[in-house]
Image (tube, rainbow, N blue to C red; front, side):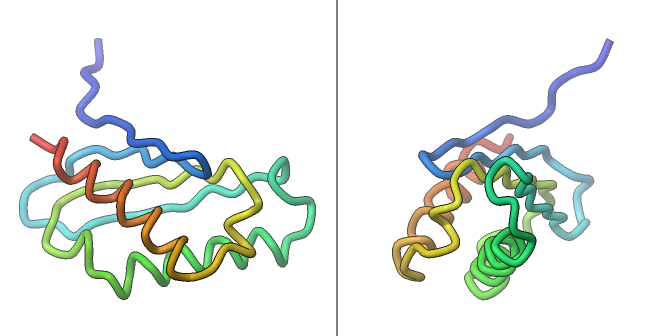
Length: 101
């Protein structure tokens, strides 16, 4: 029987599923943008690049042993203004960090 060690934080446009890693390890992150969101690979990759860059430059997960997976629910993230997108993503990330044991 497995034990759930993580949780989820959700917003209107995406979800963040997370679990705690071994102490002393760096964070690991993945972003999932399915073909249901956009049939065009360029748009899916644009969303991924934007989210990776926000997490990288904000240093929100630095020095926190966490495994995180962002699942995108809306293609509006491709065209959303950077400030609004950053605010939304960081809000979800902070919720996840606060819930970690």
